[in-house]
Length: 543
Ligand code: G1P
Ligand code: ZN
Image (cartoon, rainbow, N blue to C red):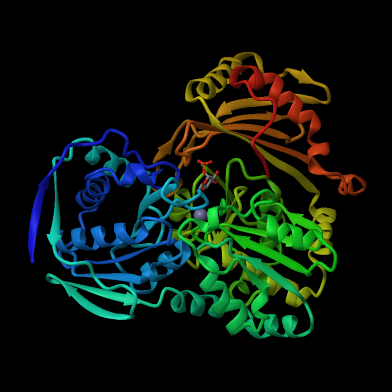
């Protein structure tokens, strides 16, 4: 087996986005495209010779091919060992768990998260550092810079490695260890949550339904809910992972997790429903005929954390992404702990967790997690809720309504306009910035603008500054409208409008969010001139 050095030309579009490099499968299939990016990672991270890498993905189309390429390139680049999930599978939180547990130098995760898969779908790749979290912006910038000048990559000339049996093989001088993708992660969950209490809850007739959406969490959910917690096998639906997710959009929200929504809003509904996304890091929580917004979920988890064994000693602090509602801030205030507001994307939480400043983190985009790993974690959030329910023995809706009664309700919604012409979408953002000077003090019905800005963040740990993270229009009563362009899409531009209104009055808490936010929605559309500028009269997805 010999190392081959292949000449290549740089691609200009290998800039990692909110969560790694995401492109159409057909782009990754272009000669040298994947190899260039992988070599750019290896050239940027300066791993010492003989280092160990973790490797796995969400099982989507092209996962297996990419794993073989990366293994051969890792061998040619001097890695000593790669831990790879059986079949090339590791959910994103499980990959983070493996990196931390076995103290690897880092890991490569193959996923385009909740984006559709298949030959015409999306693929993605990202590097996670030794703390188990997504590489910081400093690292992703270095990878991008390298990708623009790269002129060769190294790959071992070798046959494919067998990945479907647990065990070890040699690839040149590098050891490839195929590991069970589920067990380390399931053990970690069992160490954090009171499995006996959850088992009792389920044995007592409490009914759950978990929708794996034909994505990576199927086997994880079966091991945890069915095998370890005794749920009936039929409680995990769409449990078989498929390379194209069965043609679906593996995003756990009210639009895409339709099988689950039908069950929870139908007759004889289960008590609790949940879903996860393509790579297992997102979650949606439902009660019977009741949707818990991800922002509320973070707040409820924080307020009830000490009911859960792994968090008995309390929460050091909370972090939420800027567009996420301030519901968690109110809990932090009551607990007298700090609440950090970071830019969108999990990579901004890592430093805070490593420094012990925060225990819990969350994003409005169905992401919740803690310092047990350095990724958001779908099944962890589901187990957190089940543990709370096992202790409190109340329905989901009762728990959330009691939370609102105590803290007030941060009514929240996000409107996405997907697949827009990039120029028109950028035009909306520019137009809004052009209005900055005249906005403060402007009145719109009962709302008066307190201030507006383009959010920028200074990392309190390393002092790095991230600018241009979304336009905030904040009103005097704390209500907010945020405009942001997505950094994960692969087709055109996606513009997101985040809407939040604070409601202290319990007698208004039953209102539908879209109705309660109707004024803010009107203001957002008026200010941005969005409908005219992008020629759309309604959002693509409302969450
Ligand atoms: C989206 C979400 C963001 C999340 C990311 C990765 O990014 O908005 O919160 O961290 O996916 O799951 P966006 O497309 O908005 O850049
Ligand atoms: Zn994901």
